Each structure stands twice: as C-alpha cells, then as structure tokens.
Image 1 (cartoon, rainbow, N blue to C red):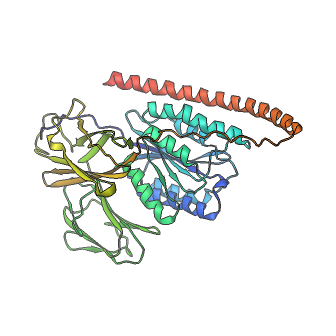
Image 2 (cartoon, rainbow, N blue to C red):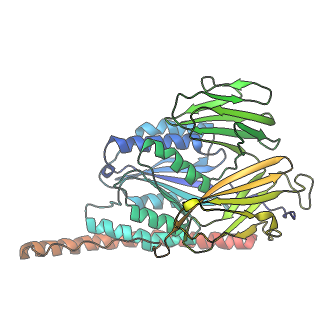
Image 3 (cartoon, one colour):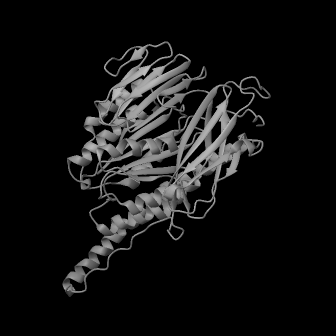
Length: 460
C-alpha cells in the first residue's frame, strides 16, 4: 500500500462528562448506577486524554475541571464520588451544557460530551417551561453542537430519562444514545461510548494469546464477567501475575463485573490472558503506532451509504521515511442484524489524501439495528484493532424527536381558566427571559466556533 505523508499529530481528544443528579430519577438504584458509572470511568479513561466532569440538578457543580487523565486525576475523581448525591427535583441540563462548553477545548482537539441522564429536563416547576427548554435544546443547542463537530453521547440510567431528547441530541450531533439500567449493563455502555469518543487501539486475542510488539508502551487487559473465576496473566518469560497481588509490573482493579490489569513498559513477545467464565476480553494499548478514525457517522438511515475516513499514525515517521513501516495492510470487518457480515480491503483504497486520510465508502446497510465495525492493521510484525459501532435506523425515522404539550382538559371552570391564563402569561415571560439568556450563550458558542474554524483554516 502506498505510504501516507507525515502529518502533524493532533491534540489529545477531550471529553466532558455531565452527571444528572436530579432526584426525579428515582431511588437508590439510580444513585448506585451513577456511582458505578463514575467509578468505572475512573478506571476506563485512557491515560493522556483531557476530561472534565460536571454534575447538575438544582445547580451545576464542577466536579473535575478539564485536565489530563493520570493516576492522580483518577484518585481525585474516586474521592469525589461519595459526594455526588441527588440535589433536588430539578435537572438543569441547559445550564450544565453551558458550563461544560464555556471552557474552550484545546486547539485541534476533538471534543465530545457524555451525558449520564436519569430524569427529564427540569429547569423550573412549570411543565410548560420545561417543555420549552427541551425544545430549545433540540432547536437551538443541537445545531451549535453539530456545526462545531461536538458529538454528544448519552446513557439513560433510568426509565424516567427523556429518551426522545437523548436520542435527538445524540443522533443529530453524531453521538450514540444508549441505555444502562442494570449494573451489568453499565460497563458495556461506557466502553462503547469511550471507543467512539476516546478510541484506543487493541491487540488481537487468539485464544488466550496476544502479541506485544516493541511499539507498545503500555497495555490494559480488561475482562467482563462474574467475579470469582480463575484469572492469570502470563508474561513471555513465564512470569505469572494474579489479581490478588498488585506489583510494580501489573496493577489490578476490580469492579462488580469488570477486572482490569494495567501493565506499563511490557516485555515484547507473546503474552497469555487466561480467564475462566469471562464474557468478554480485550487488550487495549498505548502506542505511537495506531489507527485514528477521522470521520464515521454514528447513525445512518437504512439504505444510506456512509463514508469512513482514517489515518495510520506511525511512530516517529519523518517525511519520506519508509524504514519504520515499509508495508502495512488494513481491512474493515462489519457484522450486524440477521447474520449480516461484510469486509472491505482498505489496502486497495488508493493513496491517502494530502491530510494523510484514507477514505472509503461503507457498504450499504439495509437492515435497521446495531452494526459492529472492526478496523485491523498489520504492519511489520505489529497488529492493531479498533472496534467501532454504527446504528442504522429505519429510513422513515426522524433524526430529531420533539414532543407537543398535551391539551388541557376541557371541563375547567371559567375562574380556573382566568387564573391559568394569568399564570401562563407570567410563565411565558419567564420563559422568554430564560430563552434570551440561552440564545446569548449560543451566540457566544457560535462566534467561538467560527473563530476556531478560521484559525484552523489559516494554519492549514
């Protein structure tokens, strides 16, 4: 395959996490899911990514301002989790989005949002004002997110979450809208969104064996399944590591249904991950050799053709340098509903464009449902895999979902109508004030987005 030109390294991807602490989400089960999700994020977020965390209920609180994830960052987040409690009947999502987006992202980085939601939008005591705020998010905020290439991903932790709003914001901005309403569902939902927002390459597992090449700086072995099964990590020199013992070579972390083993500076060679009863296993790597996806739609309509754009990031490659990776091959495997499967050989896609991107048209996906995509790279004794997902909706489904207010009953007496009319006028005035404030903030976001686009154009 032709060598791609050397390109400037992009800034680290950024993620802003918004945690719904409105009490409308229900009882302790929701609080447990919320704490479980934050604890898992502290373990699953990749080193070097920039992440910030906010909570929102009656008020918005900055739990963790955007910063680079490292061991100290993870420890601070875990220390804060017990204090993340339900804060009242309201859930002011517009204010939370405003707070999270008010801090500019690093130049050149790709910003994503993750919303952990358990209640509908509630900015006031009035259902009318709340319905208006919900519509404004879809009508005003969503175009700003989409126009700034900011993907909003969501996980509904409760049946009370507004699925129509969450799907509208996610699908309209290029994000994923998932549900996780049981403890065993939370890890899989988080992993799927992190694969999209903060993708990490993986090493292929063949049985129990995976090969660590010299470009691997660290790897994390992840197991999903019930606790109690026998687990063993075996190094190329025969050294065995068990979850009961954390050493300088391997750090273990256990959650309810998830086990992690992080290995910095691993020996090159064949490792083994032996695990009885594991439902899923993966080996994610930190390495200068990786696949980077630049563009992939999160959702498509059935029968619509999408495009994938990616680049191979090579370690310390200088312009015209063919010594590191003289040859490499890339392919894409797809699987989906009703036994659908397809593969695309990207090695025949032609030379990369001037930005180093390889562009390929995806096969037409006719059936609605969830599709799994797996990018695979083989290069000079090194292999990488990058899992992705794509939601295909029925062709007739709208991208945005809004809800009309229910008509009031027609048996109200005249005095009640008079009082209701006065209340509507007052609430309407308040709604106009809130809408104007939100639009002022949206104008600020639009100006910032145009300024960043102009800077990027000048730098290009």
